[in-house]
Image (cartoon, rainbow, N blue to C red; front, side, top):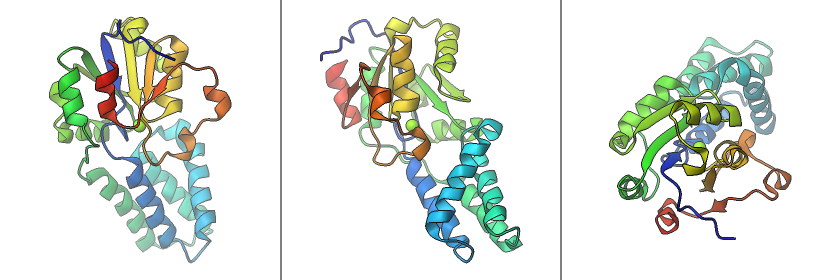
Amino acid sequence: MEIDYSNIKVIGFDADDTLWVNETYFRDAEEEFASLLEGYETKNKIDQELFKMEIKNLNLYGYGVKGFMLSMIEAALDLSNKKVSNETMEAILNIGKHMITRPVELLDDVEDVLKELSKKYRLIVLTKGDLLDQERKVEMSNLSEYFHHVEVLSDKKETNYQNLLDHLEIDVNEFLMIGNSLRSDVLPLVNLGAKAIHVPFHTTWEHETVTDNDTKGKDYQTIGRLSELLKLV
Ligand SMILES: [Mg+2]
């Protein structure tokens, strides 16, 4: 089905795993965490417990590396029956600090696509996570010049998007969102009556996955790489 993008005036971009690599760093961190605690449980069990802890803590800490660090610490205490050493605690903190200081690795074609689109559209970044960490990544990405606005949201539900569009006085019919997460970047916008395009990343956090039922009858396109956008809008 053809989707008409001719009335689009503003394009919103998700940042993590849409503009730059992120989820891969979490997978690396989970591997490191599991190897630190391998004396207490199987890797599978450690992965599961950490994920459960993250989800349990989401409404307290929100998304991002700092909340992830606190969940690793809490999971380590649980998995070790509070026997985990101070050295292991320090190593866990260092996993998180390393994540926060990793260089920003842009995905393919990002700068060319933004440069081209910024001639014709108002571009904004809509991301969730730790404010300071996301601001650092925007700064280090050298992409700031292409964006009119950067917003770090506490969550990416319909109400978060609606409030932001109202605040920035963007008409929902004139808004297109681009992102790697169906759950966070695509479905809420489609439900609001905006347009959205899905650009999958090779790895998706379990919490971001959706079922066929969630996407059934929803009108959005999926592209294999960001540069395909230039042929659509
Ligand atoms: Mg993302």
